[in-house]
Length: 74
Image (cartoon, rainbow, N blue to C red; front, side, top):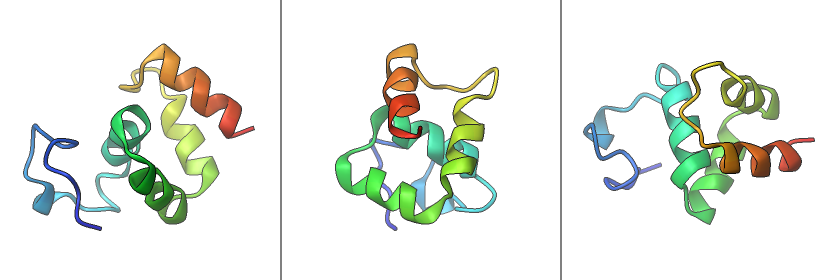
């Protein structure tokens, strides 16, 4: 997938590795992703992986987003 530059404003999206940067990708898409990016996320990573990242103590996901995705991931 070609990532939006505005989604990853602090790095060059071409340098993002789907395996190595999974946490970073999951956090950004859950927080700021558009519907097509969210669909890609759920095709690429398991629900367990997404839940694990979302529940990390220092996850970069707002309380509102976390509440929404927690309901979705039940």
